[in-house]
Structures are given as C-alpha cells and as structure tokens.
Length: 473
Image 1: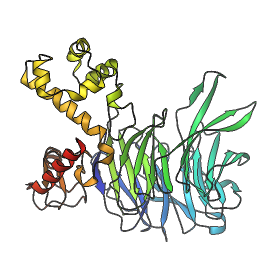
Image 2 (image 1 turned 90 degrees about the vertical axis):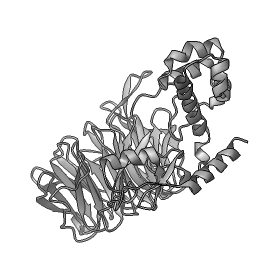
Image 3 (image 1 turned 45 degrees about the horizontal axis):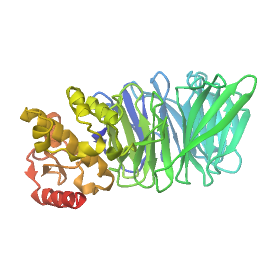
Image 4 (image 1 turned 180 degrees about the vertical axis):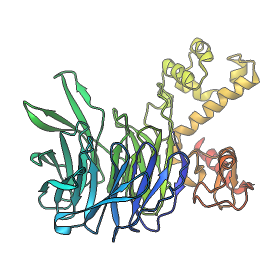
C-alpha cells in the first residue's frame, strides 16, 4: 500500500526533479530554485531555497555521502552546493554553454556526469573541479544518464531514442535504438541479478520514453566479452509519454511517472502493477525512492511534490494491494485462501476453512449467518473481523473501476464514512482524524486548516452506496 503522507507546494513553477540523500530531499524547478527538506519532518531547511541559476533548473542529485548537492540548468552550468549549510562550492560551465539537462555523481564520488541539449557529455573531476573527459551523442539532446553500481560504466539516453554505454574513459562501448520517439529517463538498479545458466551477474536497467513505454534491460559487463545490452521486457500501463523511472533501493520495485498524470509502481521480478497513484493534476516529471526509508517522492508540472509512505512488508500468496494484478479471487484454491487468512492475521481459522473446503468462490459467498450457523464461529467479534476482511477483499476486486471521487485521498481506498474537512475535500473519517491528530495542515494542499471540524458528507455516502449496489447486481 502507498499512502500520501505529505505534499510540498513551495515551488512557483513546474517541478523538474527530486532526489534523496539519507537525511534530505532536494527538489528543483522551472522557477530557477532548488529546495531542500529534512526527511524527519519534511520542513524546509533554513538555507533553502538555493538560488544562483539564471534560468530553469532541470536536474539535481546528491553525492554518495550526501554532503554535496549538484544542480544543472538551462543557463549552461552545473552548480555544486554544500548540503549541510547551502554554500555554493563551484559553478561548472558546460563546453559550448548548451542547456544542461541531467547530472549524476559516480558511485565513487570522484566524477560528476553532466549531459546537455547539444548532445555533449562531460565528466567533471569533483575534487579538482576540472573537466576530465567529454564526448557527444549523435543526432539529439542528452536527456538521461545513470552510472553502474561499480562505476565501471555509465549509460546515456538521447532524444533520438538511443541508449549508449560508455566507460569511464568516455569510450563508446555499445549503442542501442531503444525508444523510437526519444529516451526521457533511465536508471540502473544497485542490485545485480544472477544468470544461473551461464554463471554471469547482470545489472538491471530501466528506460522510458516518448513511446509511452518502460523497457527493462540486462547489462553484462565482463573483461573477456566487453559490455552487452540484452532486452528483458516491456512494462505497459501508461497511456502517454513516460517522463521518469527509478528503481527502489533493493531493486524489487520500479516507479514511473507520465504525461497521463499517473504514477505507477511495478514489481520488478514479475512486471505486475502494484500501485497506480493519480493525485497529481498535471504531467508527472520525476519520481525517486528514498535510500534508507520506505518513502517515495513524485514531482509534477502542478508545482507540487507528493511524498508517499510505502508498506514494504513482504506479501503472502493471495495478499492484495491496490490495483495489483494477481489470480482472480474466485479462482483461488483452498491453499490460496489459507495463505490469505495468514496474511490477514486470521491463521487460527485455516483449519476450519480447510475442513469446510472453502475456496475462493465459497469465501466470497460467506455471510454473518453462514459464519455463525455453518462454520460455527461463536464470537461476534471474530465473525465481524472475518467479514470486514472479506468485504475489503470484495472491494479490491472492483477497485480498478472505482470512481476517483469515491476514494479517500489519504488511503486511496473506498470511503465508508466520508467527511468534509475545512479545505473543501472529502476524506475517510478515521484516516482524517489520524491525520489531524499529528498535524494541522491539509493532506491535499499542505496549507493550514482553519478548523479541525469534520462534517459528514451524506450526499457522497449515498452516492457510494448506490454505486456499490450496481456493482453487486
């Protein structure tokens, strides 16, 4: 489950990029600024915003230690900042003064890569602040880049659709036409995967583009064969160009953001959709996982950055999450039902359900009467608990078609007791009460709430009830 826990709305123009260190979140914007926030409470640091670029800031990233923050801009420069006090340490001018679109630190903090609109690729030596190597991609602007975890090579993506692999001497090792209409972003997982058949270890890479697609690749790097790029699969789900993609720290998830205003989180191993998040009101331009906490940040042309809390508990067979693609519940076996019971902390009922041959179809038919009279569950509290879990399961079966206005903005679940807050939005009562017990700002706007009064939204509750009746016919 992904829960929206905070919204940052300090930028006055499109948010272009966001990046995490172990303790901070940095965001940058068309408004020429970089803003830095503490992860402990999402407050802006005293030295923020960072100002100095003459035009839009396109990308920002932290060094491996988190002590240096880099930003690059249409003004043709890449700036280095001390993330502890906000001091500007250096301004690195791109050869040719072309707008710099993307920047990344190498895993060993010796180099900083900067790519520009004229196709130029520059490796800066961060210690000496001197240009170390430079190159150029053919026929397009450089839009994306990523280092391998070992730092032996890096990948660039261009508006011409090419993915190019380079070594640290700026020699081109491999080139692949990946996205017909142009590459917009790429990322390499820090966790290699093993090929048991050949005994090789591959780096996983994701790329996305103007063709609405996310592609997964395997990169093999070995002395005796050089570098090979192997196509793995394509992840569908977006209906418009995909502008950003990123791996989670453990490599088990991939997140993407699109012109369709949606954020999708995929399971890397299966390609299944785990979550679809649709709170942004304009193009989603950037997304990033935090390295040491279950947080995800997404930024948009709506000038906001949403911060999401992820439930990273291992899923059991049959455990359901929002918009997840799994075996239909009605097709579950008795073993699948048993696994679901365990995942819902109802393991005490496994034997009873197995004895009564409860499979998926029978599970969905259970009522308060059948639990009491046929399964002989005497405790009213236990019967209610089981029924609540079954009702939630029924809801997940139809969650894809649930109108967005029926979903609580905080939990993204169908509302049972909707209330109106003083920000004008409707929320599930329990979720909003928990929210305002810790903070006095709106979950949707991040602005202060003038009052903590919650008013029952009876009209919305009736509309949800009528919709549920149509779904059960």
